[in-house]
Length: 196
Image 1 (cartoon, rainbow, N blue to C red):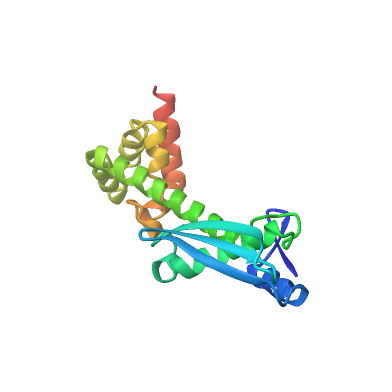
Image 2: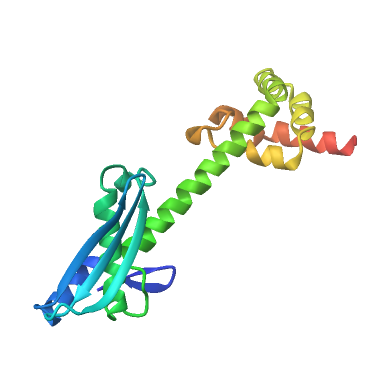
């Protein structure tokens, strides 16, 4: 059974190993740890019964880069190396990467994007703290025109960076976000642009 990710079929390493063991019960699947520090690197070898190397696979993981790598980076790395060695021996269909590797890569990409978004947000807060405080105060007092003016004086990139939900570390509360979506605030924004 394969797993579909981004419209491509990937098999799990467990499936590759199971089929390999059925087909070649006398072959070996061996691993060699090349690095075991912050970066973990594993080389896996598939040998026939005579000890001849038929395929190799390498993998690298960074400790702490994902939840699994906080506790099991070596094991995770070895699994990836096995999957790549098996793919080199034509176990895995059309894809060299296993379902495990692809899902890990997607998670790492999403984490990196979330961290970048939060860094941009925090920098925008730091650089515009007085304006943000003025916006928050204006919203609390129903001073829609002043809130709109303060927001519109920030550039588009800054406003985009500040658009992080409060549940994800954003500076504006859920109540303030609802006020930005209110008709009073929208009307004030329109008036501000008409006055420019």
